[in-house]
Image (cartoon, rainbow, N blue to C red; front, side, top):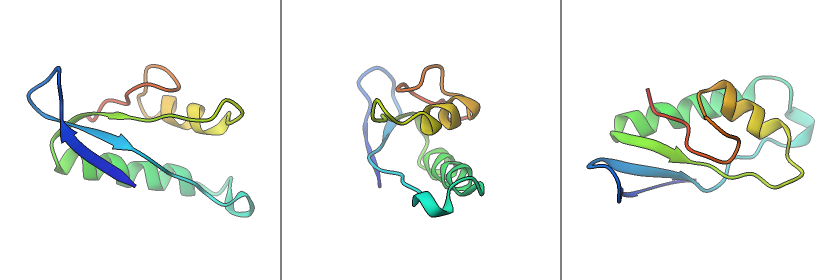
Length: 81
C-alpha cells in the first residue's frame, strides 16, 4: 500500500510505503524486487521525491533490498531516480 502526501521539506510529494510483503514460500524468486521496482515507478509517475519505508527489527531481507535499490539506510528514504 502506497500513500502520497505533500512533503514538508520539498515542493514535491512524499510517498509512504505502508506495506510490502512476500509470502515466505515465494521468497527468493525476485518478487520483492519486482514489487519495489513497480513501487518506484509509481512514485516516479506521481513525482514523489522520496519514499519512506520501515521494516521490523527482525526483518533482514527487506533492508538489504531497499539499500540495493538506492536507500541510504535500511529504514530511510529510497530516492526516486
